[in-house]
Every structure is written in C-alpha cells, then in structure tokens.
Length: 151
Image (tube, rainbow, N blue to C red; front, side, top):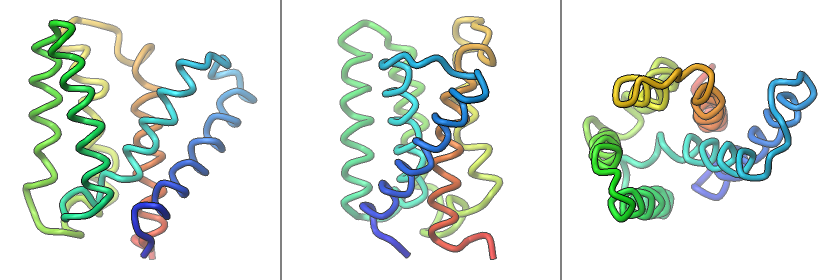
C-alpha cells in the first residue's frame, strides 16, 4: 500500500491518461484553467480514502479544503463554504479502510460535485460539473486500485 506520495503519483497518472483520452475523444478542450482544475480534483480523489487517518495526506487534503473554504468565505459565497465544510467532515465518520475504501463510496462521495450546484443554483450540473465528478472518481479509483481493493 503506497503512502500519500504514491497515491498522488497514481492520481496524476490517471489524471493525465483521462485528460489525453478526453481530448482525443473530443470531450475536453485544452483550456489550462479547466485542465488544472480537473487534475486538482483527480488528486483530491486519490487522497480522499485515507483522510480518515492522521497522515501527511490528510494534512495536505485539509490544507487545500481550508484554503478553498477561506476563499469562498472571503468572496462571500457562504452557502458554498458551508457545503464544503459539511462534506469535508464526512471521512471522520467510520474507521480507516472502512466505508471510504469501497467501490460504492468512490461513486457516492463525489456526488455533491453534481448535486450541490443543481440544488443551490439550479445549474445544469451534468453539462458543467460532470468532468469534475469524473476526475474525482478517477482519482478515487486510482487509490482503490493501488490499495488492491479490487481483488
């Protein structure tokens, strides 16, 4: 089982392969901001299953969440900051290698990426946010694969 560096490397590999596939199939446009965001979501997905333990991966994950949450608050997006705060607490529910290391969690955990924008702003989530959901799922998958959860 790799540590956080191994999971970040695996997530980056899957992110690049997903981006190459997305561009080749015409699903993505080479926009640097979009590509950076998708890689970031993939890396967060690759770290997520282990954020329920005291580790460097957990520290990095929550540092990113705290920075984004602070940015949302400073910009006045209080509802978004509240949703982010709520969902960032979920890994504390359960034991390590419990529910966070399941295939169904890989699909359910990132659902707020699609659902919250639809509920809060009535945004067509599937057109705008589906690539971010897919990136997080892909990173999550890389983590479970490296932890040999699919035997």
